[in-house]
Length: 347
Ligand SMILES: NC(=O)c1ccc[n+]([C@@H]2O[C@H](COP(=O)([O-])OP(=O)(O)OC[C@H]3O[C@@H](n4cnc5c(N)ncnc54)[C@H](OP(=O)(O)O)[C@@H]3O)[C@@H](O)[C@H]2O)c1
Image 1 (cartoon, rainbow, N blue to C red):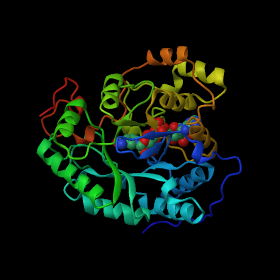
Image 2: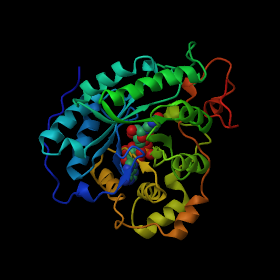
Image 3: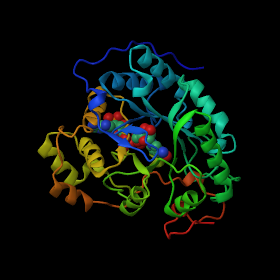
Image 4: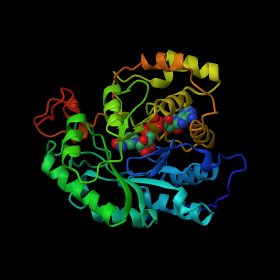
């Protein structure tokens, strides 16, 4: 049973005209706005608080919303979309992303139909395979817990999942399909065997985790990177934090640029993402935050200089925050195995 979102939609007088927000043209001709808003509340906010932020951000001009069935709030966000659409935003202006969770790789179409029903939409703009593994873990489990049925990446199985993604496009239920948490060797196999190429890939990207080589590979293949945890997810759950994790918004270079521009270091992370070319999807339920995050899409809303961009390129700490430990299978050495760091798929 969903909680009820009670509010109206009023276009913000000082908002950003969605028509002037730059768009990225995807490899299938669809267009995605240059900055989106995330909807994973890291256990800190209620579903209604997050849905309320989606309406507030849309009032201000935000049109790209990153959802996922596993976030457990698509019913409330569906109420937000109803309010936004009834408030006068044309459906074709919205760019809605959702994702099939790991426990539904064998029933992608059913999962997509559930998301459509929950989101109260008749098509989804972008549908992603959330992780390339069918490995499931219960909500909130300890990071060292292991699913006894967890398996390594099996390409034949992934292609069966991808074929269902392609079918969704043929059925007209989704406009674009993509991947998330992929690696280069896995993507090479997918590109070899797919009928419909992924239009985007969602990956962790922030100044302390730039993944330059992988980023360049995707761009060269015509696959648009979407950057999650663009601020370095400072408020992620404690279970997702380790002692060696670094903090982007405390980096001296990020802070120095923030000081010059008179903004929060988080805003520098978003502007860096836009200028570098990925589409960041920062999360926030606070008006001032999601408004300044959206403004970063505008070319004339502050500018990080070329020298500063070069300096930011040097602060990469290769610090992966979303390590995915809970998806490991028996016999693996550690979370690094999920990421094929030696260039081959870990068996
Ligand atoms: N595909 C995947 O596997 C995957 C994985 C992780 C995340 N995601 C997606 O990516 C989205 C974003 O990731 P995330 O939420 O982990 O991390 P994030 O966007 O890097 O960080 C979010 C936090 O940054 C702070 N913040 C946001 N805007 C700010 C601003 N303008 N000024 C100051 N602080 C600001 C907020 O903290 P306060 O609340 O304290 O202000 C907020 O909770 C998620 O919501 C989800 O949609 C996808």
